[in-house]
Amino acid sequence: MEFDVEKVRKDFPILATQMNGKRLIYLDSAATSQKPRQVINAVARHYRKRNANIHRGIYKLSEEATEEYTKSKDAVARFIHAKGYRNIVYFRSTTEAINAVARAWGDANVGSGDHVLITEMEHHSNIVPWQMLAKRKGAHLDYVKLKDRSELDMEDYKSKLALKPKMVAVTHVSNVLGTINGVNEITRMAHETGASVLIDGAQSVPHMPVGVSGMDADFVAFSGHKMLGPSGIGVLYGKEDVLETMEPFHGGGDMIRSVDFQESTWNELPWKFEAGTQNMEGAAGLAAAVKYLKKLGMENVRAHEKALTLYALDKLKDAGVTVYGPGNEEIDRRGSVISFSMKGAHAHDIAQVLDSEGIAVRSGHHCAMPLVTKVLNEPAVPRMSFYIYNTQVEIDAAVAALGKVREVLKRGA
Ligand SMILES: Cc1ncc(COP(=O)(O)O)c(C=O)c1O
Image 1 (tube, rainbow, N blue to C red):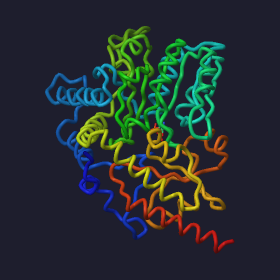
Image 2 (tube, rainbow, N blue to C red; image 1 turned 180 degrees about the vertical axis):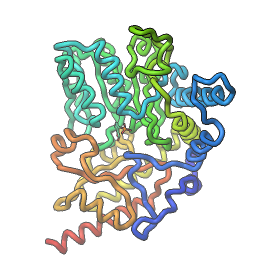
Image 3 (cartoon, rainbow, N blue to C red; image 1 turned 45 degrees about the vertical axis):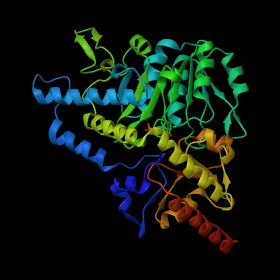
Image 4 (tube, rainbow, N blue to C red; image 1 turned 135 degrees about the vertical axis):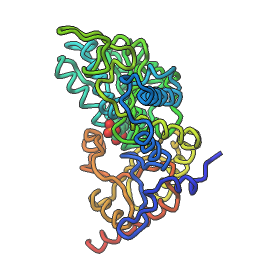
């Protein structure tokens, strides 16, 4: 059963604001999602009722803050079908979570001449940390090529696996193309060759049911701010036995068991990865975000976005644009981001015309420069992305605004 989008919209105070004299139409949730009052209230409630440092106090308020923080991890674990809070490390973001793996796991497991395998459709956060690791270690960084500028070339993947990479790091959903990668199969094949696997779930966990147990990846990273939660909190899921073998990423307070003048020993999971005072209000907000999404049902979230994406792809057929990524006949392999280009119009100009109509879309290389500039061969592309609060009416407005761009182009010609 789908949810009532108008009821959902009432939970998001920002959607009532005006932009350039028009009601805001927010089509940039792939960059960051808007926040419902339930999340805003949970953060405020933390400060009002639970604010004390966790794991430190002997007093009741600190114990309550610690319980709230641990419960947040349990909620996140249940949301992605992980065993429990020991699998869940909080970092600032997907970016920091991947950096942690590239450092803490990579430094111990990747050596000179070894291979790390990523793909041509990765976000910079799943490219640069591996480039840095490869440089530190004298390792090779290989890329799985794309087929039809749209999906991973699985034959190429097979041939690159023959190089026996130590790590395969792949995005679940492309933030530019919308392509949903077959991560279960990708992980199975990688494990068969002895590689470890990291899945970048920044664009999947907020939008569809994701079960880490079925996926079987060693690591999954995602960000709170893209799934209705606060910014500054991101998740690294890791298999317990893998996390157990890893050295910490950051050193400092709370991540230790004991400290002497020259040596220290580490705290148990997951705390050994969390040094210093944590984003406790962020954890409270993320728990509220997960609760909100669970109540809607992730199957319903996906169904809503799928319907919107199909609708938009259909409308864009007559909008004089080239759409990238899988088409509507492949909707089961497509998430809810749509990047496109219009001949003769710069991406930023398109975004500006839409902005003048109160419509927020992102324009640029979307932190995927190799994909946008080398594979799509564009300096920048505009991108619409949808979430639980978007409607067909908003898509109609965006398509109508694209008509205005075409008029401006005609006048200029
Ligand atoms: C696929 C993908 N991976 C990683 C990231 C990085 O997320 P964050 O900026 O929250 O670290 C993004 C953000 O846009 C993304 O879309």
